[in-house]
Image (tube, rainbow, N blue to C red; front, side):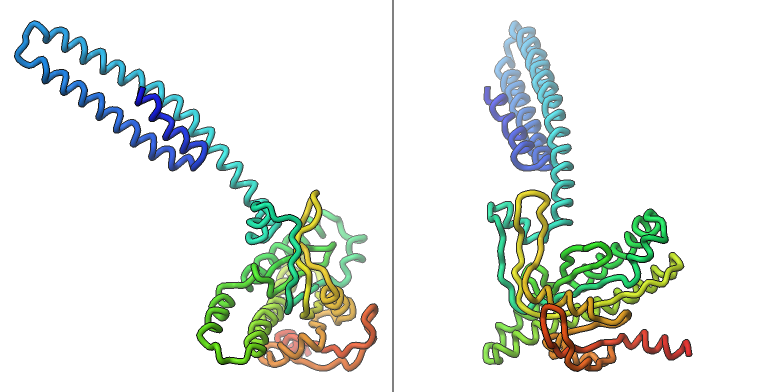
Length: 342
């Protein structure tokens, strides 16, 4: 009876813990069960020492108990093997579904949804927003086969963009046709270096709070700018691979946003707000091969002269925004390339 009930330990571990843990519990169960049965055999054999007329009965008892051990452990091994394989398959399917969810939602947001927090609406200040758009893609889609233009070129380009976004510790939000949207400065999107920087703030409590906030903003703003630099390089590489000549137009802005997950069907993590609209307007009013930015963004990244050539666009009328002072950042690498080509 004890052996039957104790078999619930490895079975329970398979269903409620993990398949690997249940394997360890079954090994312990089998070892303890075998030890107890051999102990019974040894004590039974010892009790018959000196009584020759009981030796035959003792041998019969030993054989009976051995067969009992073989039958019990053999049957339970078969049952456990079936349960173990079933639990292993469940874990594989669970990991596949988790991988799909993690590719759609940030891990921190996914944890909140699993805890039952829904809808998710976060107000976040000082978020860097980047929009990038391929110039001439709509016209090319009418001339080139979609399997080539979208299935090969655009897929390779967005795959490369995904990798460099991850490298810079930023957050891809979505693609809209041939446009690509990235944000930086969301709480769950901070890289390890940012966490170290925030930790360092606690060691300098006398520093000006506004300066520390500005430093953190500048950090992810600079990463957004470096991302744009890498995006230009990746486009150049993939253009050469497919013998195309697309250009990239980039717009960036910084400001408050509302971030979260809404709806029940095909939901995604998204950001909303006037700052998002401003970043989009920066892109649509930009120049191919350059980064068009608001004055708020320029105040934080205008010192990156080792990477960009900055110049003011003066006051421009931006649709939906009115008059704005904007700036253009031209990558120095492209300026050098243009100079060498002359």
